[in-house]
Image (cartoon, rainbow, N blue to C red; front, side, top):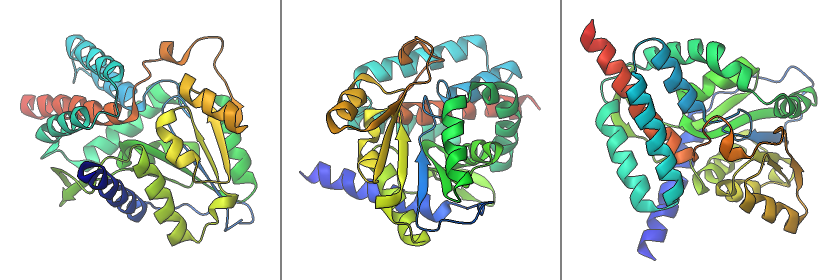
Length: 289
């Protein structure tokens, strides 16, 4: 019981931090101030895991070897098979990530994120999901990404798509440099719902009028929070839940299962292991200069 309470408190803290860090772009249409749409990223808005695509971009720049990339991919796949809801696995991955992230410059991560999005990620956006997001924008509603990916990279994706903003995992920084500590916790599972609750309070949203989109049963706390939940390219557990509760579903895949697209990775695992990948690559780069 004590562990469950601690995890709940950590989720609330991560949600509050993510909402506080969110920066909104005003809608172009006549604003509908009470409604908004929230989109998961990996396998919902984008084919595969955004942080893995970022690691591939680093590899193409010589900042990451093929062997490193393979180890990174296999490690995340194993993490997924073991179950990404295991608190011990999440804690171990978190510790590993924090050991490498300290000392990295935020501006470098953002700059590389922008370059790699244009080169690697842009063509992996699901046209169908992008159209759904645009429909909300055209209706004057704000559209937010909600993802465990570090908020700096999440913002890049949101900006490139012309969305309102992004809620993502927040890492502590001092003078533009990562300290190696998270502010709160991962924006994953229940923490996503807490972030949306906090944002709704700040922005005056009516959650019964809001919409949320995800591919994963991990995001059930978020989907159950809003009045209009959608299952997009759903995993088997989410699909079953959606059918049972008569939720709207959309599948933009072309006959391939989600597990065969890109390298679909659990959000928490992707954010953490990807942080390790990026950190190691950047450190190698700095040491060679």
